[in-house]
Length: 311
Image (cartoon, rainbow, N blue to C red):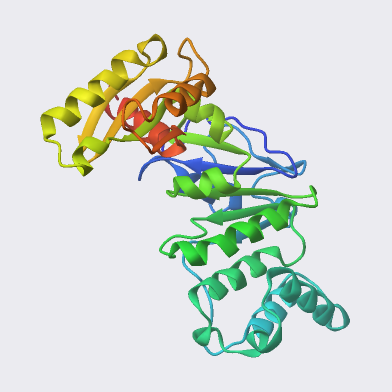
């Protein structure tokens, strides 16, 4: 069984992200939710309807990882076709299409431009608009920004937030982009070998699986011409004399010393920040930064645990 022991409720207004390495079961799960496959055991309920039935499919909008667009058709023509397939009559189609074009930000000349001439970001917006035709209650987004550059990703993230802003629909997405999951997801689900390993908010999961802060300190000795030994001595002294000796030196690169400290150390991070500020002249460390562990750290930790576990 590719997917096994997956039990989860998703409420309207939520953005739930399924994370996992390749082969974790994300694609199979989406096939089940879309009704392309039938579960061998268990049940799927979508808005009170059994998964896979025509009534359940009416409540689902699906946006695949690869844009399924006709190059010669415009944004408007695509949406008119899908509105007709959703059962809207001729009098309703243009109202629905115009509303969707405005909603996803594809108005003006873009609406009548062949999809082959659209930017990557706008092609993605069109695919998401197609998934929104008929106002389905559940939107499935398979890798919504895969292969996109960071500048193009942000408008898609904003659109995802806009979709759920009215709190009357849910978004379920898959992603390998941890920054994306942190930016848009209210909850994330980590899958491994078809089973749910962890469910929670991005912040909670980051704290559970990687309960550390990262501290970067600039050591001026290196900039002022000091040797590597002086830098290491200073970096070690900073770690030793930090409050409760909470810092652990993990790396020195050029003039930057990197430390780790547990989030649940005996002192709040604010105390460490105050101490660094008060002692920056004494230790000739004019610049420093304290950051929490990210979802990416947690993902790597969980993936490592699951890969080493016996099958």
